Image (cartoon, rainbow, N blue to C red):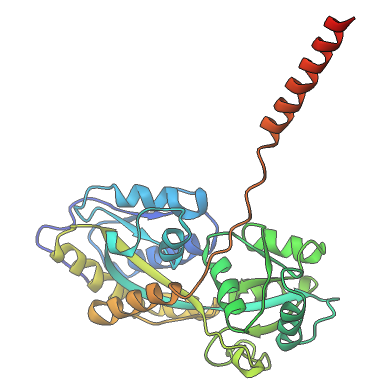
Length: 325
């Protein structure tokens, strides 16, 4: 059992910046259950879902929280991508990193009736017909960056990115023929694979144990390795001893059968990183984003002002015509 002489003396709030029932919420509830069942903390863990704006509303609430250890944040690589994309002015450097407790693979998928039988075919098309293949994603979120890393992995390849939202919405858009390709976590793909979609590749270093026949992108001459790391954060200037409390707590939690079995079911690698190892991962993931160029849609012309101008011109012309009569 994790203990402390003065901390905690009241419940600890974990902010999950997404709606209840999603992947991040599920992950934290696995930890919450294990901590409770194994009596690992003298105080309960309370989950507070603050959804909206791709996770930035919740992360801002954590960023602005009192740095006393009683409010922490659970947020994956979205903490990197939101800042890089310009959706948030805060990022990893504005928090105290606690731990990384798992890694998700990414699957690239198409509709079952898609003409593309391999990732190589798809990427060749993306080179020969730039901006013609529509990639469904959640703009500025980690799955969008998975797509941009994929695009970067094949010289000359260009997708047209469109906003679709979360996994279920991407599935609907793919099945409906509104997008040509999209990405899912390994767990999402296993959930959706029987619903009319087909995987072309995983972006992992090696083939995923859950799908041993599914080749990696690198095996198909696309130079990309990418996935999603699960992070825990404390507000900046949280006392080191309280950060250390959570390090010990999450280490003990990761060692429980409850967590290991459940993460295995979700195809999440049970990695655990703290201290120097954690900081190296954070730095590397930030550096990886430096090679990504964001191509945001060209702003539409100010149609409302153009229409107003035309109306004004025609009004003057009518007035002058009336005067001449």
